[in-house]
Length: 434
Image (tube, rainbow, N blue to C red; front, side):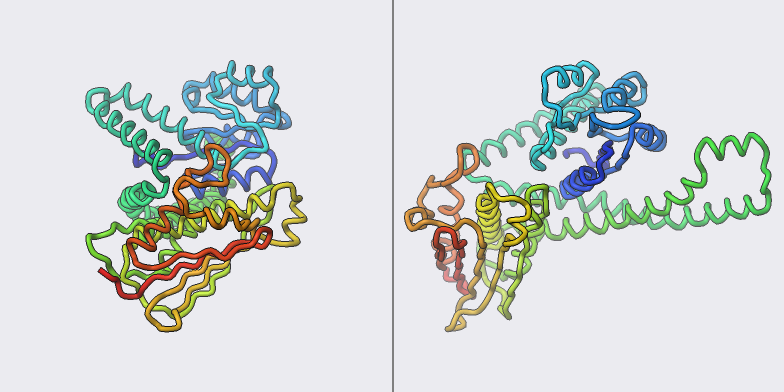
């Protein structure tokens, strides 16, 4: 998001499995997430904090999603919050009803995690643009136009050239923007924790000293559900602290991944580059309804730092690891969860010194679908891809080869047989050859 405010998304769904999957997906995407397993619970939570967007299940007992949406749109405080329906219902009548009630979008289950994040991002941006155009037209219009142009430019670059070429700049900006606000929040939340403990202890003393405070106070205690508040508030603070810690770790990895390349090669820790890339791809490794989590095995050797262009090398790692995940997903097609579980998806990363101790070898291996000899021979050719329309540019491996061979005077080779997985072997000289 372009603004620095914390973005809160409320998920309303009575199915724990759905809540877990969507919660993890949105957490990985950098959003703050609240959950409610019923409409009644959701309205109660919104008395304390209003979300920026709501993901709403249709099929719920007592109060279904349509009724929840109707009530949201009749309340002045909640009517402007974007509502995206999530349901297995895909008939036109249900969709029309949802839009008539004021929903901005409709996601049909089972859903794709990337699609959910993309739709959420779009509607949050639309809401942000609308609010700010109304409030600060003169001041913000130029900035918003510039931002939109940058987004459009990045989007065209990703599609026409190579999505990896823009990713380094993108994550570097995100990491930079995260640092200041998260440092501010981290400092404040520690004080909030201490203040909260003091206030709750003081409240307990009052309750002990004045067990019968009077009807008006007792009524207010019941109205705010004081017992629940006392129990839940420390949990919320602990959860916030864990979230901050996680964001700071992500920010560190993003900065490692997006290291700007200088005019000359600099020393770089290959393992840090691989680790940061895996963290960025973590959302694609997690288990879903179709398969268990993809396991990553690290066989890191005792290798020195390498003189290289770190940003470009990270792009190669990203491309090869993303391709490995794609190959595993392709090999899973047509298999049940149990079949995949019996032969788990696996990515193995190995680093070692070459026999002459002059180079470092990085091996990235998957147990996916593998390559035929014909595909293997053409893998590094410009615009060659085996992926469907819109899923591959045919530039990834060609650019990876250019970075490794032409820029670093190394080599990149493929060991693969169809049905037996694929291994890419990268060889990088320890000392740069200028």
